Length: 183
Ligand code: SF4
Image 1: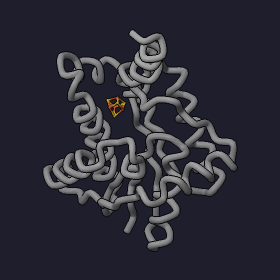
Image 2: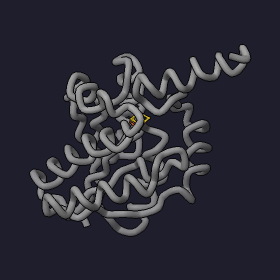
Image 3: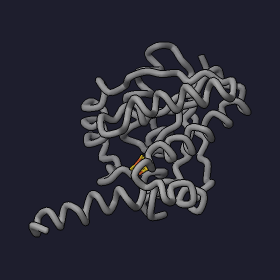
Image 4: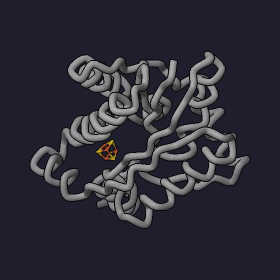
């Protein structure tokens, strides 16, 4: 199959690309992540992904639509359920591009991370695929997560310290600091 692989960053793309290619699929990477804040961080992840894809000769589409306003509007007052909104925004766009590009299916590197809400990604990806008429290629890439981490370190790739949105950055640093201060 010709599969559009939504990619959130370089490190998370390593194992899904390898696994899909080993199965004989033709891959095109697709970067669309307006959830990543601030923009400097977004650029680091985009460039890290692009550099890796070019190195292993995987073609890419870099969607420069940094729709920050839309992301924040969608999440507003639903901060506790923000990942659902975040996955849906990114996967819907990926499905649209897959349809437009006449791909056989689409999938996402988000399925490699044990830190993501795996079942929710599967549910949303499948539902959007059914609604739009483009199959969501589901695979549990998590068994390859540690391999991805190791390769990304060996390759000296940029590795992020938080999931992506400003809320996750707060959770990573502010809550940690307060816990350390005993607050
Ligand atoms: S924590 Fe991660 S998946 Fe959830 S909304 Fe933030 S960036 Fe998106």
